[in-house]
Amino acid sequence: MEGIRRLPIAALLISCLWLLLSQPLRANEVSFEVQELAPKLYMLSGKGGFTGGNIVVLDGQQGSVMIDDALPDHLALLVSTLESMKIAPMRFLLNTHFHADHIGNNEAFGKAGAQIVSHENLGAYLAEHGIRSLSGNIPVEQTGQPMITYSESLGLHLNGHNIEMIHLPAAHTSGDSAVVFKDANIIHLGDVFFNGLFPFIDLDGGGTLQGYIAAQQTIIALSDDNTILVPGHGPVAKRDDLQRANSMLVETSEIVQKHLDEGKTPQQIMELNPLEGYEGDWSWGFITTEKMTMQLLNAMGH
Image 1: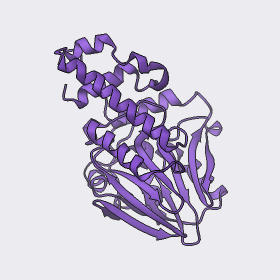
Image 2 (image 1 turned 90 degrees about the vertical axis):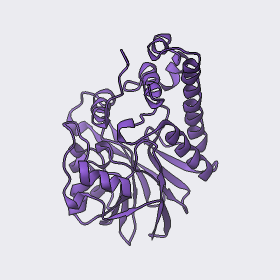
Image 3 (image 1 turned 30 degrees about the vertical axis):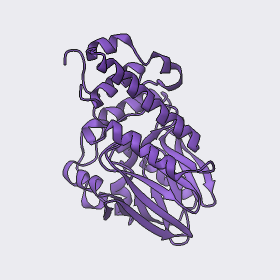
Image 4 (image 1 turned 135 degrees about the vertical axis):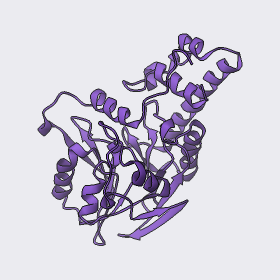
């Protein structure tokens, strides 16, 4: 299709995120902000620069559990932050999906003894392709690949918590997991939720528009007014925030589909800028209204 291209693969996403979200600061000015979500349960997010996706850590006498592990460049910073928190030795490392800004340090934590857990599609992807990075896919040693995989759901029971990993099929990627802390009423969604931002759907990595919408609706159904939702990117959220994001995605999809149904070409739709009304609330450096329109057209097969 003339003038319309598929959105970049996840490696370019990571590159753009770094360029657009980080500031030209010295390395020692970048840090992890630690937010306690519940007793012994924390969220770590980049402060002063882009460190990768949001991380959740559960501490306890039976060993700690961490969800995702940041970009490779920030391994030393992540380790020093965990040491300053006096976190117990890492027992389990849960992967939400296969992008390098979320699991770039699998190998280091695997070598240190953490058991890596993921959906089976993520495990298969890492074994065949490695982790996507700024310079392309990097092969991952066995120690950086999941030791435990699952197909639909998986339960962990330690440190007084019942934790469940749930597969969200064909959403952001082919191997997305949400991690539910049932007792604490906290859910980490990975990149199935960009809080307050247009989302990125990795169509080349097995993600789909309808799967993304359905995944968000699955989490909405699992949540209540008191549920704490940890997005892949952005601040901690509530169910209303996720509902708003889901409604936006449904609405923008319907707008683009309406123009297609009227017989307009993708190029004509792009020139109309049909999502202009969403610019102020949702557009950001990597996914502008133009790129969101392009992404929706791509997801609809154009």
